[in-house]
Amino acid sequence: MNWLFLAILTAFCFGLYNFFLKTASGNIHQIAGAVILQLVAALAGLMLLLYFKTTKQALPITQKGVLQACLAGLCVGLAEMLSFVVFSKNVPASVGTPVIIGGSILVTTLLGYFFLRESLNGWQMLGLVLVIAGIALLSAGQNSGH
Image: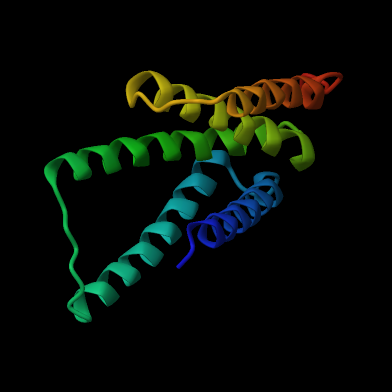
């Protein structure tokens, strides 16, 4: 399957994720919401894992892969709890989500550049500058939310 189609489908799923996270944030404690979210995600993943196992598909697992998946899980858990906190401060989804996702893009790109030695061309660097500008514009004038 084409990577771009999969990336767009992933973006759609992340959009729904952020929408439901925002709508849930005023109706559930941040930690409880994050735990429930993670449990549902784990159950969905477990069902897929069992499907792959029962259909005898290869499931290569390395110690390094497990460690990196655990670190990613820790980071996503913290990000989810913090997202619930952000949105419980009455930050609009149209502001909070782009700031969070835009910041995520910056962090990921910089980590890729410095630690994975991935290259950036001029257009990509301009894109990062525009992400920074977008974050600044979206957050400008937004009340601090207590």
